[in-house]
Image (cartoon, rainbow, N blue to C red; front, side, top):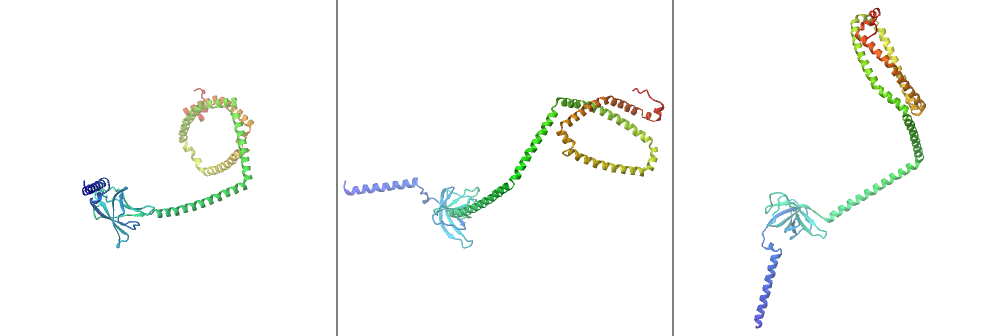
Length: 353
């Protein structure tokens, strides 16, 4: 093998390696942009710091194109940015381009996904969102932090004043507070003694038995009272009929209406005086020296009241025959009201029902 053949084979090997390398680059690299079709859209920004030819354009973080040119908008003001977008990445009409800048100053155009069913066509122009500058955000955050710290300092000062006022108030009225606490303790002690006295009085077996008997006798007395009321109602009905029959006799009463009215006026005056006296009496009862207060504090007074209740129970037991006789009497009056007058005196009855 001569030198010429060796050089030829080495050159052929180098060319083959270069072709294989280029194929691998085209196969595994992002080189399809060399022959892939693009469409052009325009975006208007109020300002576009850091944007220049070749600035990447992304959608949801994926590279979809780049910036072709940047020019000032002489009509509306601001900046017109022309973008080249790959055909296989269509953009929806409601997508929004946003200019992002990193802390190092690198700019990127980021498109939102959008939800519209219509897509942008080549040559369309849309409005871009204002850029978010990290340094401006840090400046605004610093201003807000300063204002927050100032508010916190003012609030701390106010709380310090409140604490000082509370300490001064406590030191000034410490003696009064101790007196109030002692009075409250004494009042609670007196109330406890009163409740013990009441419990002791009510807990007496004899008192409980008397109360039980009185309560058990109430239903019977109520039934008899209801029957008496029914009899009185019938008697009142009969009496109303009798009064209707003697309405002509009441004519002289009409002639004395002036005197009757005067008496009624005097009665109203007396009733007013009686109400005032009852008010004075109620105040006397509710006072510390009143009957209720003495009843709660004086066991002897309660025992007297208990004896009175027992006497009242005995009296009610003795009045029971009288109530029965009264019911019989009212029943007779309801049946024969004419016996009340002179005819009843001339023709007395035997008294038997």
